[in-house]
Length: 287
Image (tube, one colour):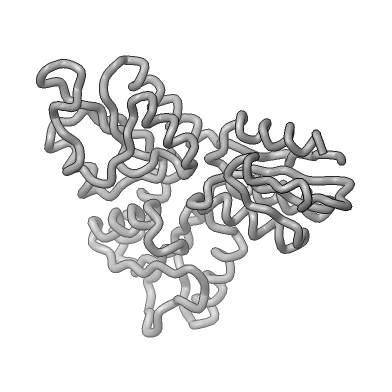
């Protein structure tokens, strides 16, 4: 069975940057915390916790005495998805050492949302309600005085909108979904100001995955089930390759699922490190 990896797959710049920053904190010997999982990959998050960078759900869960030395402030690593301005301020007010690992693309989207709000726009965030990145985008827009709506698709667009309307997107959204929302707004007689904040790495992975999925018997998509961009990859692959499997690790693979397959494609989300991809490829090549 031939195993083919997509031309673009695996950890993106923003994820690798966040991991490198966390590794530096751990190497310094101090206690570290991340507000929520640093990235959406349960295996990586568990490894970080074992090495001294624990994920917590709130600033209140971080104790001052968690440092190595008496009175030493623990480091708080801001996750790649970013946080709300209120959370960031709370971390700083308590005197914790801040390591901002927010993905630069996410930071750009936050700035775009705030800019639209400052211009007086009703801000439409195309993304998943409740996702940490989306919560951050809406919070930065509201801090700038804007009213914000989160829409997952054109069906979610609220009635009664009027110009000026601004649009930003969760960085891991499919381009087609952003375009569909913008088209629906335009058809409603609006003239939306659009900031295309979809990450280029996300788009490249989706395009490479779609190209490969159309030419294989089965696709394996590797990444956390809580990872938005990995979920989008699986959706893209399933459009042309019904035998698509979204897994977190090689342990989930069932050899029987690949019976009759001559060619299997492999791709991975932006939060998936190389060692996890290699393990899946090694498993498949043994079939």
